[in-house]
Image (cartoon, rainbow, N blue to C red; front, side, top):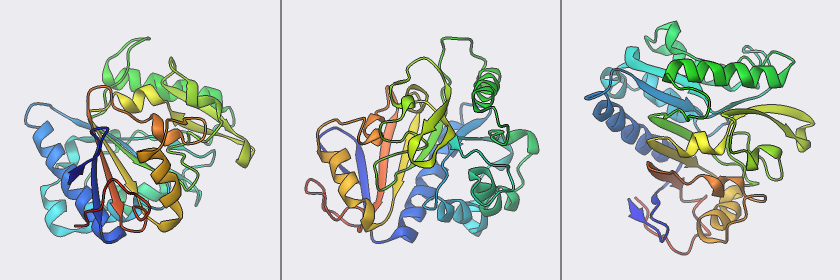
Length: 258
């Protein structure tokens, strides 16, 4: 684990498998520590291909699974695509197939985004209402997730915060139906203030095709319209980047591989 100039922690490992292992061990430690003083643990899951290996590891690795207090963990999602829960593109479906269906998790602990509703704005409002109810907050307050998992696309987007999309500048709403021009569709996403209010943010980035955007985000000027992941800066929590050596290949301020 090494530090860069902006005080974010970065861990570079050899490949995606090692990245998932390092992230899973960090997450397990945080869950165990948090539950020493809290009754439940809340986490917002990421979609995309990168976290699939992490989810499978958490559920299928005997040692990790044995230590995981599944019944005390509540699962939310950072974003969702406008599809039913059984659709191949569903972030919920991916997490359910890779992890949730393999672990003894009470159904009430799974809080999916009901993005099959054709009214995306209504879906966003309902999910915000569900979060307020769970966290016991009122309008104007932010939920505080114990952990948020995030990935990053080769264009610098994270969750469904895409370059140039309306949600980038949203500061009041918790959840937004974000119009994404490149897909000609709405995506449901938590907003930047919600992500930044988490106790712990874990970014998982794998693959050489992301090296250019990652360098701009970690070492370049702040360009949120071009690289939305740059906006993820926790207000009071910790931020850890887990990178494989391919994603980190263009970085100049960090060079240690573990």
